[in-house]
Image (cartoon, rainbow, N blue to C red; front, top):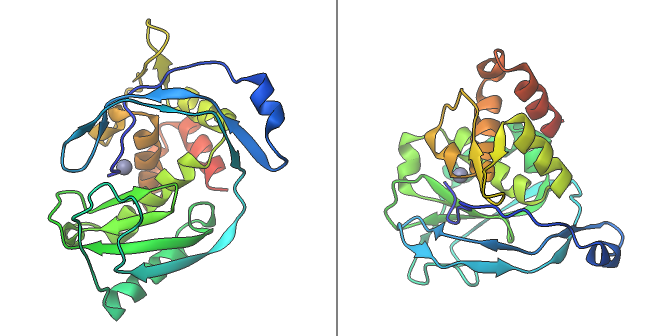
Length: 231
Ligand SMILES: [Zn+2]
């Protein structure tokens, strides 16, 4: 349920020189290629190289939902139109944001859009600008689950390498023989698109955990790991 899905992960080493250059309160994101992105309309996006960069550590700020119809800058589908939110819809979103764990909701401004496009996915998100787009197919989904899933994507993209590595290890993502790609070895996988990558798996698990932590009572280490992420 994210418009860009990372299918492959390349493990490199953190450049010490770059790490040293990051200002206080920031962490280095290593340079890595991203291959085979898939948009919601099914089109593949060619590989890109993500440059080394410094990202700020998360700081918790009360959620500020912004309900808008204005198309975000550089939105991948330039023809996508957005419609007005009704007051009832806004109230429902605000109520969900109040109930979900602060670790995923307290990120400051969250831009919320209602698309006029038809999509089998109830939602997509963009972490960089903290945007969540909702489609009409939301009517057959649970709003709380959908928002927790998208907010978990935004959360994942704000985590540093060590935290991501902790999740990958506990959730049983193993490096393949090529030394570059990962595969999911965990026996219990409830949502099939978890196999797309650790980020999708993370969102699915956070969504399931918030819905009912008992889903994980037979997986104590994974339960503990998810609890820690939502502390
Ligand atoms: Zn997703």
